[in-house]
Image (cartoon, rainbow over all chains, first blue to last red; front, side, top):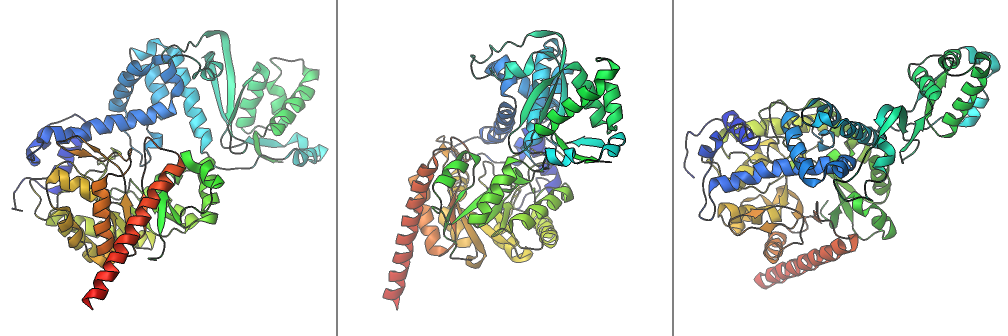
Length: 265
Length: 281
């Protein structure tokens, strides 16, 4: 092959990337036609493949958003998202990280706030899926805490636990995503926002809604506040004398459901 | 290391089928990035299969040819995975996957120039220092030919292996694809690769568009690739072989049947080589 002065390694890589990202066509001058195909056809294998590959990742990560939007609108949205948020992680698994914020803040998608909420829920499920492993504390360990320790004891959730507020009926709609024609998943507004938690006690993720008092107590627990403060968090919703029993009941259910990763006192 | 035999790519679609049909392959190749996560199902399954099978790690994001600085976070996470898996070997691709911090999640070919060779060789040496082992680099399927290239792809690979003391994952399908796309002789490619450097073979399917072939890994292996594989086995005897399937993934049993074809072709090619040697003596 003959030597040419078609540019340094850095110049060639920049031009190639610009071509793939559709931000410049200068690279066409650096590659050859073959006897069978012109260089644009060949370069477009990379340009087309780039978008298709990332759209496939988003399709896998966001089946609920796809069920709401339908394939054509999802494809259009995904291309806009990829252009705004190119992947900056070696693992394509993270490419959809900003989708909920994108949908919530970018016209015309911001006119459908339910889609942003669906994306937030699906991303939380994805985060729980491969979050750090930690065994939930067993009920016996909590039951054997000495009475005097309950003044100072604090609990930490599993690393997988995510807490999300929804103004739309997102998780129940998500469960219907495969029962409807693509593009026809309806997500109804709620009369008031509902808090959900997503967590992974073993290998499979769980999610459920919280009563308002329970949501307040979860927030206090996530903040690392001691058990008496968890009881106080309930006072906006229950009578003072009922708060300790309600707090103890909620805590017991969290432990039984495997939401609690550790405690200290 | 040359008696490892025949393996398959470890894909989550097959986890349960592998458990139900143990011992059908000698080893698995796991995609490194799929398991460079904090915890959960991926690492649970990887640990489980590692108990029963040797595993090779195969990455797609090292971007060894990029002009961006080496991603030390990535290399640190890869080292953690290596320590966990104790793999047969660790491979990635001779390519770049992006720059300016962006990852295109594609295997972009390098210009085969002395400048690129210097650049990649220096980076391979640093990666090998960091990982504490030799790196195995795969020839990629490519669609464009740089006007700037001064060397053939096989000259570049051979020089890199020598200069950086790394090894080669010879993807037979990729040789076939690139030979078609760039109109070179696939046999000349194979003959240009130093025998002692080839650590592993890849086989896969592709789509031929007439004017060019796209390396899709979503179809069975085509006859032309099987023929080239037979030649590769003659030139590089005893090298472990595996089949990559990354899309349109069939049942595990179908890939086991395809792997039996590879076993049969390799056995015949090896026998023919042996009888030719005896005749010569």
